[in-house]
Length: 342
Image (cartoon, rainbow, N blue to C red; front, side, top):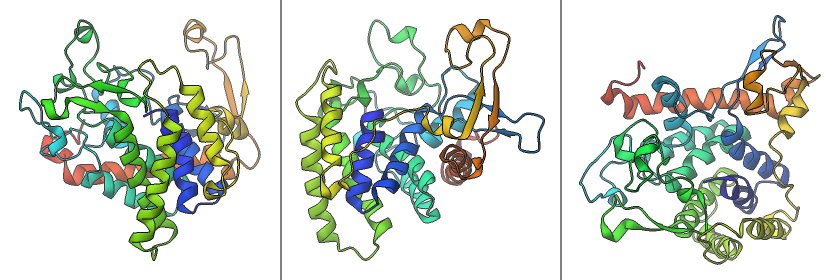
């Protein structure tokens, strides 16, 4: 999943679940920022306030195995149930790290975040929970299990869904996962995304009101699904209608049932710029290509009241969520593979 679900749909789901517009926006921004938090910053170096953040995504999927294991299974490819019906493959292969939707691990990881009451942790965990639908049948690790047939497959690293490129992440796409048995091979992302939205709604609704009746939640979930299905719109093989879909998400956000507040478009620098002063020396470190040829590093310094900033609170939440998720995975899954000491 990408920004359409992690930011726009997550906001709509949280708002419909009963979060205030401000709370829902924090949850949604944190959810999307998991994918954008891919750079390590050293702030206030040499001072008592020195700080280094913790990335939740990597720009380089060829990082050492230990780094991939810290990031991918905890934030993007939560290991699920190898014997899940949706994981049946033509070759009969199983993998203990295989991502499956709504797995026990994913629920435990999400529930610990909900119990914390921390909106930033809830957003981060919502990202990884929803990804169990979009990223199902891939593992967040180097493994031929991820490989798909095709002329370009051998040239791509078998990490996550690299072989499938962006196919699992586009809400209006229907595609074929050639690894799966014939009854599962045709994949409708719409079906997967709407199912993820419904389950995420249940989680967030219970977080707001634990006494809410199941029948009432089901009625609300059905309306939510219908609204999101309308917003996703027609099938879109080339992803040409993304902007139109975003406009429909924004239109939904203005309805009273979704907070009656037009959601701001996502600005990935907003939280960082609110918390940190950035002094550029030569070429900005944010330039993905040219910065590699500039030995001078930019300087970063905290702005006043940074402890209350969204960016700082997100980073602290990411550290807490990674520690919690890693502990759950070690207890239930990773120790069986002798990977915890990587």
